[in-house]
Image (tube, rainbow, N blue to C red; front, side):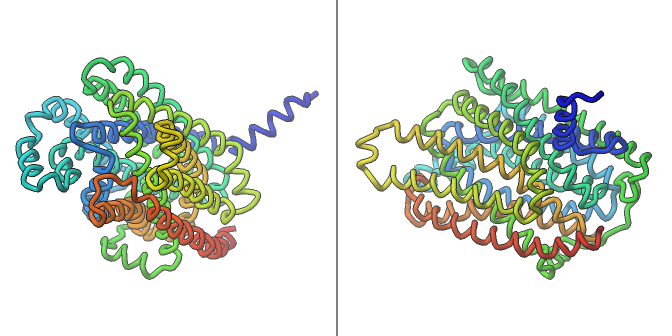
Length: 495
């Protein structure tokens, strides 16, 4: 006899984990691999902002300069290298080499460069430039002064773009079909949310433990975990390839020698430009990156103003990341998969631009009021700035939650029906350059506005940023319709 409670439990379990017995091994390995990669990414992203923004004579406005003028061109160079290596190496070999290279660079930064930052940093040159320019271009000079932290920032950004977006999802998309993705991808996205939940208390613990000493101690302690996670990633990836191949789903398995796709980076970009479908994916990638980063840049400016110390800054960010993981996990497990299956790709894809747009506009209106409506500050005082910081944290939390739960999933599904050449090279061009162009675009906008209005703070420019955000959201929303029409045709052929 089956009790009603068992029936209810099974119903919800199937909704959360819609996996057949024969698929459990494959799903578990892909899920665990995503979890490990996301663990490293979460730790790197939290550390990179803290060490750079809270450094002496630095500020949140340094981040747009790094993203726009350094990370973006390096991303292009990395894609050139990736496309060339992809023509000569097995996918598995490329994966292992990439992970070990990242790990080596992280260890060099943490145990060689950072401990000797004063010796390696050109403080004298930076001080002379400040004097020579009469206090202008402070943020550009800060990039030169803190090139060590900038290097770490670039490494962290590229981990998300190369390891997570290209290597991991290329592997997953090669062993899953569209109907599989609608069942599995919510679980894979949820693994990243769990990583946020796990890393936030871990980071907070070591931040508090070493709060009264040099922040270097916190960095080195956390990098020890990163090293362990990287080695676990290599082992799990090898296991996943081996297990999936044995299970007979490895026709496109990355351990085998793939058909050599001789498409260059220029060819990849031409391929993207000639395809309306890929162009629309590129539009939503750019719009998403721009929309989130253009708000986040202003919020971090307020955050640095409120929490100038590294330990306090990182503690607040860790708290935001923890709740981002909680909310994103709940949405991924209980809502995003069901919405995708019941209402279709277009409805799920539209949720991110709508919510991110609304929350971002409210934040910019608050910031505009603080800088252009003096009576608010006279009435509320410093509390209003704290409210902006708190609401900005909530906006950041919700924006990233819906991005992880809806945008990441629907975007990856859009790649599945494409041919192998486009999956490898077209996806790399769109994911890395498209996503980076969104972040770089928001950075260039902020840098240009800072120079045009001769200000060292992005806060007074919130009115202009509000308009730019609206434009990006409109383009994003319209592109989802165009993708959905073509995706429906692909899906009909697949079934």
